[in-house]
Image (cartoon, rainbow, N blue to C red):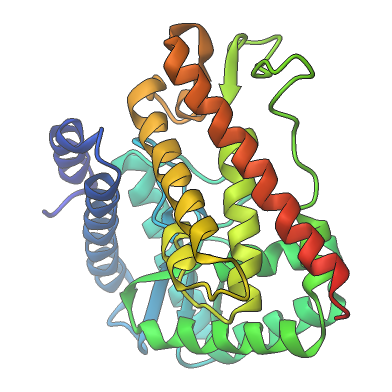
Length: 322
């Protein structure tokens, strides 16, 4: 495919066939994004000459965790091998081209500007190493947030070892500097999902009145808790399911691992089958009135287990003497 609009047509043709299957859907997203990058590289080489050195393009956020819904925004970065002003300019131009291409292919720009078009997320290997070290040393709320975003990174194009090597260094630093409580505090606030009468707490005003915010109230407790346990266990996988499967008995007993795995998979399935994913915003909300009594009970169970998992992780980190 030679243009972003051709890729967009491919996306629109294919996505209907996989919109109810989480695994196939995320495989399709990967294929679409890789096609965009290929076109972007060719366009950048046409405008600025051949690639000056090897690089890797990596996804973060839900794409990094292999947990995208039908619609998704952009969270990505670039690591290139060599340092230099002209090299920096080249890869920033590539980052902007990829961001533009992804927008045309159906992926909204990231509100927080976590994109390879932003110099903060497009650096040489040595500059990335220094930046990650600075984030670890400063370890204020924003720096820890950036580290957590980076930890969910997954290489999708180019030299994957650049990303893996940097991630291993970040893990080592988090252990060495005992940053677990700071990581916990960064993800501590959970929005209440079940009321005192056992009802699902929905949005009370705005366009999503009567709907459950799946992202904040259902997904985040699982994602944040399992990421913390993966950090403790030095597990470099990025998807919540892969992280769960790799955890040891010490981090989380196997019977609990299986329960949370099934609950999370069911949650991802509900998000695809019960929400109205006609755009990025709507894909985060589940209209409760459309659910059967059985489905409501299943959603409640998922929410309760998510809170229980997060409390377990919170307690285990708070009681350990890091």
